[in-house]
Amino acid sequence: MNDLISIITPYYNSSKFIEECVNSVLLQSYSNWELLIVDDCSNDNSKELLLNLEKKDERIKITFLDNNIGAANARNIAIQNATGKYIAFLDSDDLWESQKLDKQISFMVQNDIAFSYTSYQSISEDRSDIIDVINAPDKMTYHDYLKNTIIGCLTVVIDREKIGDFEMPNISSSHDMALWLLIMKRGFDAYGLNENLAKYRIVSTSNTANKWRAAKDVWKVYRQFEKLSFLYSVWCFLNYAFNAIIKRI
Image (cartoon, rainbow, N blue to C red; front, side, top):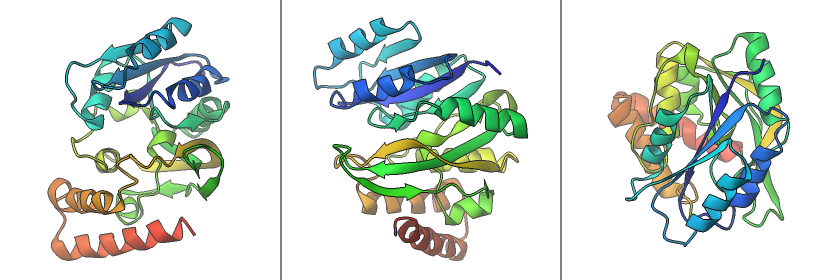
């Protein structure tokens, strides 16, 4: 169990958090990884910081874009450049526990799983408060996930050899949701490891901090990407809203 893991990290004006994020990867007990950071034409003078991080470890690889293309497309460039059997996702302001990859890959190998996720914490921007803990259900099917978007992108690992090639649809805040549904439609259910192995930072400027825009993107996934009927979309959306409230109580 020592297959290469490609870690996908889009970056935009995140100099405040990126070193902490990268350090959480460097501290992983699973050592066979590559960290692919794609700088989406940042304007916060962080190029030197990223280049210094790249010098820290040969497994860190930075791509600088000349134009801002959005998080989904930045992730897709990293996915295209990835050489690992496994694809994992970690945004530049989030963190992993040191055993995250070790435990998750063991879970996948032992149970012959192609698509997995874990429990995680939501934390305040300065890490002073734990806002909530999102517990991973044992399993999510396509129709389960339409009604409960509980899979945290920062927790997902995908076995690309089993799943095949993929890319994220280009929408602002729910491209991960659309990708998980695409994978599930290929016949792969998602399996959860109910162990808190990641920290999701609530940053005021993030897309998901804007709940109204996130809700509109979920509706767009239902109608434009999944082409669900209006009535089934309403049913799924009501369940989505209810579950979003419940998982944060």
